[in-house]
Length: 274
Image 1 (cartoon, one colour):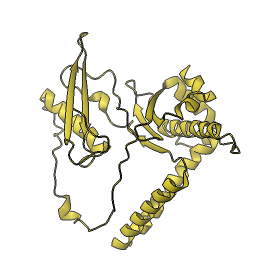
Image 2 (spheres, rainbow, N blue to C red):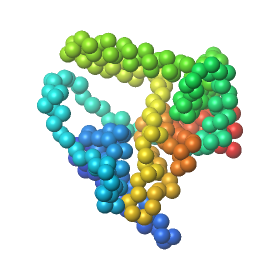
Image 3 (cartoon, rainbow, N blue to C red):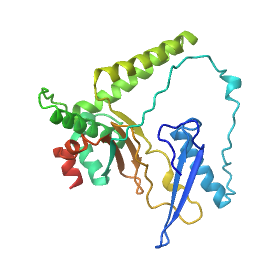
């Protein structure tokens, strides 16, 4: 069954494919509509499904859906305009493994920044900073006429943290104005996306799936030896997932096929994958 990457309304809400291999292994492929579920809900669904398959009788109850949110958050007549497809068939995916040793190397590079802090940078923050730096360098390599800026991992770490904190704080203040605040945020968000699309700027998207316990999902034949995501046709998207050992990060980098060679030839990336 072919499911549209644009999440069309005619697509099935849930598709599951079971593949059995001659060696005895089993792969479970799952595709679920983003219209009814997000990544966090998807993780909860997988966990509850696995428990139900095992007939789990533990004291922890299975989570059951409750669709009464409209009672507490009545729908508003917001006009979001026409939703355009995000499908990009020229996108290719590169998987990069940051094992425990690689994580420790990154942590050593920035240890001086957090010498007096009781909150060292997380694996996700360090990997995101490292990849943002590498992607910026590869973009400079593609546009050789641009003046290179000396961005380093040291600069990216506080930049990411500070920007997120400020954005959350600003949004909270705006939302406190009620319905007008919601419309201000929506208009600002749509306007920012339109400017980004028109300017030709290569924006980067990072999404963290490392906290979802996919490796704990046992459907009756043992816990998975590997979990992964399918190729997502959205360029400049980085998805971060946990490793089976729970001490590393798998980064799934989605780039335009014309850009992937520049990224692979980056000095730091070559060190990591060699």
